[in-house]
Length: 334
Ligand code: HEM
Image (cartoon, helix red, strand yellow):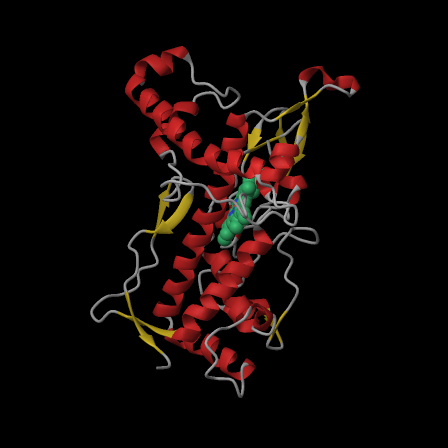
Protein backbone atom coordinates (compact mmCIF):
# COMPACT_ATOMS: atom_id res chain seq x y z
CA UNK A 1 0.00 0.00 0.00
CA UNK A 2 2.79 2.44 0.69
CA UNK A 3 4.46 1.96 -2.70
CA UNK A 4 2.66 4.93 -4.18
CA UNK A 5 3.40 7.04 -1.15
CA UNK A 6 7.09 6.32 -1.29
CA UNK A 7 7.32 6.94 -5.01
CA UNK A 8 5.38 10.16 -4.86
CA UNK A 9 6.88 11.58 -1.71
CA UNK A 10 6.81 15.07 -3.18
CA UNK A 11 3.04 15.31 -3.09
CA UNK A 12 1.80 17.95 -0.71
CA UNK A 13 -1.97 17.72 -1.08
CA UNK A 14 -3.82 14.92 -2.77
CA UNK A 15 -6.27 16.93 -4.82
CA UNK A 16 -4.68 20.18 -5.83
CA UNK A 17 -6.63 22.29 -8.26
CA UNK A 18 -9.92 20.41 -8.10
CA UNK A 19 -13.29 22.01 -7.53
CA UNK A 20 -16.55 20.14 -7.14
CA UNK A 21 -20.12 21.29 -6.66
CA UNK A 22 -22.12 20.83 -3.51
CA UNK A 23 -21.43 20.66 0.17
CA UNK A 24 -18.69 18.09 0.35
CA UNK A 25 -15.84 20.22 1.56
CA UNK A 26 -16.84 20.14 5.20
CA UNK A 27 -14.48 17.25 5.94
CA UNK A 28 -14.11 13.59 5.24
CA UNK A 29 -15.89 11.30 7.69
CA UNK A 30 -13.35 9.32 9.63
CA UNK A 31 -13.52 6.10 11.54
CA UNK A 32 -13.24 6.01 15.29
CA UNK A 33 -11.12 3.74 17.49
CA UNK A 34 -14.07 1.45 18.13
CA UNK A 35 -14.65 0.94 14.39
CA UNK A 36 -11.00 0.20 13.81
CA UNK A 37 -11.02 -2.35 16.61
CA UNK A 38 -13.27 -4.50 14.41
CA UNK A 39 -10.14 -5.31 12.45
CA UNK A 40 -7.78 -5.90 15.34
CA UNK A 41 -8.20 -9.59 15.97
CA UNK A 42 -6.24 -10.72 12.92
CA UNK A 43 -4.18 -8.01 11.29
CA UNK A 44 -3.28 -10.16 8.30
CA UNK A 45 -6.90 -10.09 7.10
CA UNK A 46 -8.56 -7.07 5.56
CA UNK A 47 -12.05 -8.23 6.62
CA UNK A 48 -13.16 -9.09 10.14
CA UNK A 49 -14.35 -12.64 10.65
CA UNK A 50 -18.02 -13.58 10.17
CA UNK A 51 -18.30 -14.12 13.93
CA UNK A 52 -17.01 -10.59 14.62
CA UNK A 53 -19.43 -9.17 12.06
CA UNK A 54 -22.30 -11.03 13.73
CA UNK A 55 -21.40 -10.29 17.35
CA UNK A 56 -20.63 -6.64 16.64
CA UNK A 57 -23.30 -6.21 13.95
CA UNK A 58 -24.32 -2.71 15.01
CA UNK A 59 -20.69 -1.52 14.88
CA UNK A 60 -20.19 -3.31 11.56
CA UNK A 61 -23.27 -1.59 10.08
CA UNK A 62 -22.06 1.79 11.35
CA UNK A 63 -18.65 1.06 9.87
CA UNK A 64 -20.12 0.23 6.44
CA UNK A 65 -22.22 3.42 6.49
CA UNK A 66 -19.23 5.54 7.45
CA UNK A 67 -17.12 3.94 4.78
CA UNK A 68 -19.85 4.64 2.21
CA UNK A 69 -20.00 8.32 3.09
CA UNK A 70 -16.19 8.52 3.09
CA UNK A 71 -16.23 7.10 -0.45
CA UNK A 72 -18.95 9.57 -1.49
CA UNK A 73 -16.90 12.54 -0.32
CA UNK A 74 -13.50 11.48 -1.62
CA UNK A 75 -14.58 9.92 -4.93
CA UNK A 76 -16.30 13.12 -6.03
CA UNK A 77 -12.95 14.90 -5.84
CA UNK A 78 -11.06 12.02 -7.40
CA UNK A 79 -13.48 11.80 -10.34
CA UNK A 80 -13.46 15.56 -10.83
CA UNK A 81 -9.68 15.50 -10.87
CA UNK A 82 -9.53 12.62 -13.35
CA UNK A 83 -11.60 14.72 -15.78
CA UNK A 84 -9.66 17.96 -15.46
CA UNK A 85 -5.96 17.40 -14.86
CA UNK A 86 -4.33 20.79 -15.26
CA UNK A 87 -1.03 19.43 -16.48
CA UNK A 88 1.22 21.84 -14.60
CA UNK A 89 0.90 20.17 -11.19
CA UNK A 90 1.18 16.44 -10.65
CA UNK A 91 -0.86 15.91 -7.52
CA UNK A 92 -1.12 12.83 -5.32
CA UNK A 93 -4.39 11.69 -6.88
CA UNK A 94 -2.89 11.86 -10.39
CA UNK A 95 -0.15 9.52 -9.25
CA UNK A 96 -2.71 7.10 -7.82
CA UNK A 97 -4.78 7.19 -11.00
CA UNK A 98 -1.69 6.51 -13.12
CA UNK A 99 -0.22 3.84 -10.88
CA UNK A 100 -0.06 0.23 -12.06
CA UNK A 101 0.79 -2.33 -9.42
CA UNK A 102 2.00 -5.91 -9.87
CA UNK A 103 -0.63 -8.63 -9.48
CA UNK A 104 -0.22 -12.02 -7.84
CA UNK A 105 0.46 -13.52 -11.28
CA UNK A 106 3.09 -10.89 -12.02
CA UNK A 107 6.07 -12.97 -10.82
CA UNK A 108 7.49 -12.96 -14.37
CA UNK A 109 6.47 -9.34 -14.99
CA UNK A 110 3.87 -8.03 -17.39
CA UNK A 111 0.62 -8.53 -15.48
CA UNK A 112 -0.23 -5.29 -13.74
CA UNK A 113 -3.44 -3.67 -12.57
CA UNK A 114 -4.79 -0.23 -11.73
CA UNK A 115 -5.81 0.66 -8.17
CA UNK A 116 -9.49 0.13 -7.42
CA UNK A 117 -11.68 3.08 -6.39
CA UNK A 118 -11.82 1.69 -2.88
CA UNK A 119 -8.01 1.51 -2.65
CA UNK A 120 -7.75 5.10 -3.87
CA UNK A 121 -10.22 6.22 -1.21
CA UNK A 122 -8.23 4.44 1.51
CA UNK A 123 -4.95 5.97 0.34
CA UNK A 124 -6.43 9.50 0.17
CA UNK A 125 -8.02 9.10 3.56
CA UNK A 126 -4.76 7.81 5.04
CA UNK A 127 -2.93 10.76 3.55
CA UNK A 128 -5.41 13.31 4.92
CA UNK A 129 -5.47 11.82 8.41
CA UNK A 130 -1.73 11.13 8.58
CA UNK A 131 -1.05 14.75 7.61
CA UNK A 132 -3.52 16.71 9.71
CA UNK A 133 -3.72 14.85 12.99
CA UNK A 134 -0.04 14.76 14.07
CA UNK A 135 0.67 18.26 12.74
CA UNK A 136 -2.26 19.78 14.65
CA UNK A 137 -1.30 17.84 17.78
CA UNK A 138 2.33 19.01 17.58
CA UNK A 139 1.17 22.56 17.08
CA UNK A 140 -0.89 22.35 20.26
CA UNK A 141 2.06 20.99 22.27
CA UNK A 142 4.40 23.69 20.96
CA UNK A 143 1.97 26.50 21.78
CA UNK A 144 1.39 25.00 25.21
CA UNK A 145 5.16 25.21 25.79
CA UNK A 146 5.14 28.85 24.69
CA UNK A 147 2.45 29.63 27.25
CA UNK A 148 4.00 27.57 30.05
CA UNK A 149 7.49 28.99 29.55
CA UNK A 150 7.16 32.70 28.64
CA UNK A 151 10.97 33.02 28.58
CA UNK A 152 11.08 30.53 25.67
CA UNK A 153 8.35 32.46 23.84
CA UNK A 154 10.29 35.69 24.43
CA UNK A 155 13.47 34.15 22.94
CA UNK A 156 11.53 32.95 19.86
CA UNK A 157 10.10 36.45 19.44
CA UNK A 158 13.42 38.24 20.01
CA UNK A 159 15.11 36.02 17.44
CA UNK A 160 12.48 36.95 14.86
CA UNK A 161 12.88 40.63 15.73
CA UNK A 162 16.61 40.49 15.16
CA UNK A 163 16.21 38.57 11.87
CA UNK A 164 13.69 41.18 10.69
CA UNK A 165 15.78 44.12 11.97
CA UNK A 166 14.51 47.30 10.28
CA UNK A 167 11.28 45.60 9.19
CA UNK A 168 9.69 45.05 12.60
CA UNK A 169 6.29 46.19 11.34
CA UNK A 170 6.22 43.47 8.69
CA UNK A 171 2.94 41.49 8.85
CA UNK A 172 4.30 38.06 8.06
CA UNK A 173 7.27 35.85 8.79
CA UNK A 174 7.95 34.43 5.34
CA UNK A 175 9.13 31.00 4.35
CA UNK A 176 12.52 32.39 3.35
CA UNK A 177 13.03 33.83 6.88
CA UNK A 178 12.65 30.44 8.53
CA UNK A 179 16.17 29.22 7.68
CA UNK A 180 17.57 32.02 9.89
CA UNK A 181 15.43 31.11 12.92
CA UNK A 182 17.66 28.60 14.68
CA UNK A 183 16.11 28.90 18.12
CA UNK A 184 12.59 28.41 16.74
CA UNK A 185 13.76 25.27 14.96
CA UNK A 186 15.36 24.03 18.18
CA UNK A 187 12.09 24.59 20.10
CA UNK A 188 10.18 22.54 17.54
CA UNK A 189 12.70 19.68 17.59
CA UNK A 190 12.74 19.69 21.38
CA UNK A 191 8.94 19.50 21.37
CA UNK A 192 9.02 16.55 18.94
CA UNK A 193 11.53 14.84 21.25
CA UNK A 194 9.64 15.50 24.46
CA UNK A 195 6.06 15.30 23.11
CA UNK A 196 6.04 13.29 19.86
CA UNK A 197 2.43 13.05 18.63
CA UNK A 198 2.84 9.30 18.15
CA UNK A 199 4.47 7.29 20.96
CA UNK A 200 4.62 4.23 18.68
CA UNK A 201 5.07 3.76 14.96
CA UNK A 202 2.66 1.80 12.81
CA UNK A 203 3.55 -1.79 13.54
CA UNK A 204 6.23 -3.36 11.32
CA UNK A 205 6.79 -6.97 10.38
CA UNK A 206 10.08 -8.75 9.72
CA UNK A 207 10.27 -10.71 6.47
CA UNK A 208 12.86 -13.20 7.79
CA UNK A 209 14.27 -14.28 11.18
CA UNK A 210 16.06 -11.24 12.52
CA UNK A 211 18.22 -10.61 15.58
CA UNK A 212 17.53 -7.22 17.07
CA UNK A 213 19.42 -6.03 20.15
CA UNK A 214 20.28 -9.65 20.95
CA UNK A 215 16.68 -10.89 20.64
CA UNK A 216 15.44 -13.14 17.88
CA UNK A 217 12.38 -11.82 16.08
CA UNK A 218 10.94 -14.74 14.11
CA UNK A 219 9.84 -14.36 10.49
CA UNK A 220 6.47 -12.53 10.28
CA UNK A 221 6.87 -11.35 13.87
CA UNK A 222 5.58 -7.84 14.44
CA UNK A 223 7.73 -5.24 16.13
CA UNK A 224 7.13 -1.73 17.21
CA UNK A 225 9.33 1.16 18.23
CA UNK A 226 8.72 3.09 21.42
CA UNK A 227 9.22 6.53 20.01
CA UNK A 228 8.06 8.33 23.17
CA UNK A 229 10.52 6.40 25.37
CA UNK A 230 13.43 7.00 22.96
CA UNK A 231 13.13 10.75 23.40
CA UNK A 232 13.23 10.31 27.19
CA UNK A 233 16.12 7.86 27.37
CA UNK A 234 18.66 9.16 29.95
CA UNK A 235 21.43 7.14 28.22
CA UNK A 236 20.96 9.30 25.13
CA UNK A 237 19.64 12.59 26.44
CA UNK A 238 21.05 14.50 29.36
CA UNK A 239 18.31 15.51 31.80
CA UNK A 240 15.69 14.16 29.38
CA UNK A 241 12.58 15.39 31.16
CA UNK A 242 13.66 19.03 31.04
CA UNK A 243 12.50 21.09 28.08
CA UNK A 244 15.79 22.47 26.77
CA UNK A 245 15.84 23.66 23.11
CA UNK A 246 19.55 24.50 23.47
CA UNK A 247 20.37 20.80 23.09
CA UNK A 248 19.62 21.25 19.37
CA UNK A 249 21.97 24.24 19.03
CA UNK A 250 25.73 24.45 18.52
CA UNK A 251 27.26 27.84 19.27
CA UNK A 252 23.77 29.31 19.11
CA UNK A 253 23.10 27.93 15.61
CA UNK A 254 20.87 25.03 14.57
CA UNK A 255 23.05 22.13 13.47
CA UNK A 256 22.12 19.54 10.89
CA UNK A 257 20.25 17.20 13.27
CA UNK A 258 19.67 13.84 11.59
CA UNK A 259 15.92 13.36 11.53
CA UNK A 260 15.91 10.54 8.98
CA UNK A 261 18.04 8.07 10.93
CA UNK A 262 20.62 7.86 8.13
CA UNK A 263 23.63 8.59 10.37
CA UNK A 264 22.25 7.83 13.82
CA UNK A 265 18.94 7.48 15.63
CA UNK A 266 18.52 9.51 18.81
CA UNK A 267 14.79 10.02 18.38
CA UNK A 268 12.35 9.13 15.62
CA UNK A 269 9.07 11.09 15.81
CA UNK A 270 8.66 10.48 12.04
CA UNK A 271 9.94 6.91 12.02
CA UNK A 272 13.10 6.01 10.11
CA UNK A 273 14.14 4.11 7.02
CA UNK A 274 11.96 3.17 4.07
CA UNK A 275 8.63 3.54 5.86
CA UNK A 276 9.50 6.85 7.43
CA UNK A 277 6.81 9.54 7.26
CA UNK A 278 6.83 10.85 3.67
CA UNK A 279 5.51 14.22 4.91
CA UNK A 280 8.22 14.98 7.49
CA UNK A 281 9.87 17.87 5.65
CA UNK A 282 6.52 19.45 4.84
CA UNK A 283 5.31 19.13 8.42
CA UNK A 284 8.49 20.71 9.82
CA UNK A 285 7.97 23.57 7.39
CA UNK A 286 4.33 23.93 8.46
CA UNK A 287 5.20 23.85 12.16
CA UNK A 288 7.97 26.43 11.79
CA UNK A 289 5.85 28.70 9.60
CA UNK A 290 2.69 28.66 11.72
CA UNK A 291 4.38 28.83 15.11
CA UNK A 292 6.59 31.69 13.88
CA UNK A 293 3.61 33.69 12.65
CA UNK A 294 1.40 32.95 15.66
CA UNK A 295 4.13 34.21 17.98
CA UNK A 296 5.06 37.11 15.70
CA UNK A 297 1.48 38.38 15.68
CA UNK A 298 0.34 37.53 19.20
CA UNK A 299 1.66 37.32 22.70
CA UNK A 300 0.38 34.12 24.29
CA UNK A 301 -0.35 34.28 28.00
CA UNK A 302 -1.72 31.81 30.47
CA UNK A 303 -5.27 32.53 31.62
CA UNK A 304 -5.16 33.85 35.18
CA UNK A 305 -5.73 31.14 37.75
CA UNK A 306 -5.05 28.37 35.19
CA UNK A 307 -1.90 26.34 34.71
CA UNK A 308 -0.59 24.64 31.61
CA UNK A 309 -0.71 20.95 32.44
CA UNK A 310 1.60 18.86 30.25
CA UNK A 311 -0.02 15.51 31.15
CA UNK A 312 -0.63 13.27 28.17
CA UNK A 313 -3.57 11.19 26.98
CA UNK A 314 -3.57 8.54 24.25
CA UNK A 315 -6.32 9.30 21.71
CA UNK A 316 -6.42 6.51 19.16
CA UNK A 317 -2.82 6.65 17.86
CA UNK A 318 -2.00 10.20 18.91
CA UNK A 319 -0.71 11.42 22.27
CA UNK A 320 -2.70 14.59 22.96
CA UNK A 321 -2.86 16.96 25.93
CA UNK A 322 -4.95 15.41 28.68
CA UNK A 323 -6.12 18.88 29.69
CA UNK A 324 -5.89 21.23 26.70
CA UNK A 325 -4.33 24.53 27.69
CA UNK A 326 -6.17 27.85 27.80
CA UNK A 327 -4.51 31.09 26.76
CA UNK A 328 -5.27 34.76 26.27
CA UNK A 329 -3.69 36.16 23.17
CA UNK A 330 -2.75 39.81 22.67
CA UNK A 331 -1.92 41.37 19.27
CA UNK A 332 1.68 42.56 19.34
CA UNK A 333 1.12 45.42 16.91
CA UNK A 334 -1.96 47.49 16.21
C1 HEM B 1 4.28 16.51 13.07
C2 HEM B 1 3.81 15.93 11.98
C3 HEM B 1 3.94 14.48 11.63
C4 HEM B 1 4.45 13.43 12.37
C5 HEM B 1 5.04 13.45 13.78
C6 HEM B 1 4.32 12.23 11.56
C7 HEM B 1 4.74 10.97 11.95
C8 HEM B 1 4.56 9.82 11.19
C9 HEM B 1 4.93 8.50 11.63
C10 HEM B 1 5.61 8.16 12.96
C11 HEM B 1 4.58 7.63 10.64
C12 HEM B 1 4.76 6.10 10.64
C13 HEM B 1 6.18 5.74 10.22
C14 HEM B 1 6.48 4.28 10.43
O1 HEM B 1 5.59 3.50 10.73
O2 HEM B 1 7.65 3.89 10.31
C15 HEM B 1 3.96 8.41 9.59
C16 HEM B 1 3.46 7.88 8.42
C17 HEM B 1 2.87 8.63 7.43
N1 HEM B 1 2.80 10.00 7.35
FE1 HEM B 1 3.39 11.29 8.78
N2 HEM B 1 3.77 12.57 10.34
C18 HEM B 1 3.52 13.93 10.33
C19 HEM B 1 3.00 14.68 9.29
C20 HEM B 1 2.66 14.18 8.06
C21 HEM B 1 2.26 14.98 6.92
C22 HEM B 1 2.20 16.51 6.89
C23 HEM B 1 1.94 14.10 5.90
C24 HEM B 1 1.49 14.35 4.48
C25 HEM B 1 1.65 15.48 3.84
C26 HEM B 1 2.14 12.76 6.42
C27 HEM B 1 1.91 11.60 5.71
C28 HEM B 1 2.16 10.34 6.19
C29 HEM B 1 1.80 9.13 5.46
C30 HEM B 1 1.06 9.06 4.13
C31 HEM B 1 2.26 8.06 6.24
C32 HEM B 1 2.14 6.56 5.93
C33 HEM B 1 3.41 6.12 5.23
C34 HEM B 1 3.47 4.63 4.92
O3 HEM B 1 2.49 3.92 5.17
O4 HEM B 1 4.51 4.18 4.42
N3 HEM B 1 2.59 12.85 7.72
N4 HEM B 1 3.99 9.74 9.95
